[in-house]
Image (cartoon, rainbow over all chains, first blue to last red):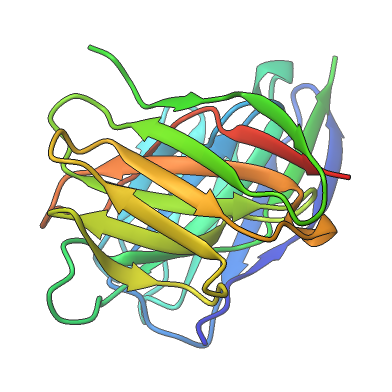
Length: 116
Length: 113
């Protein structure tokens, strides 16, 4: 069974601070995705990283995929209250024959609160 | 461009009852996956449908079943409901043979009393 461990589980910071969220596994993934989920809504895809060592930036968010494709991090610079939400990482692994898509394994998420 | 739509948004059932949840995928998508998200947890994979067949299944009992229709929409059925089935049920659509990015609906919140 593939597991994704996210840390920290909870994070409460002040507006303007920087933060890093980690996603670790003992398994290798074909790709890793980050989602943000707000209360009462479904997760929304932020980014997909595919290549080991890959770094992607989305405005103030920087995503990195580990060289061995087992871990990833999300760094937010100058956090804003609008960044508040549950951040989920999800690893995509090879599917059984005949399947159309990879099966995603989600971590438990990091609940981020940014206080004004 | 319509996103993923799910119905109903909220429902309350009692133990032993059966429930059917519905999902229409994002326009152009042909694959539907269902996830269960308990409070304070990440989504857990239930199963995935493509070409009207169940292609992959997570660690869920046979009480959980599904269907995909020719128009790619899907249903999730849960029989003999247990208290532990209370959760947010998320439908996600994607495009076959892509890198697997999922587009989620807002979910159906099921409460079992």
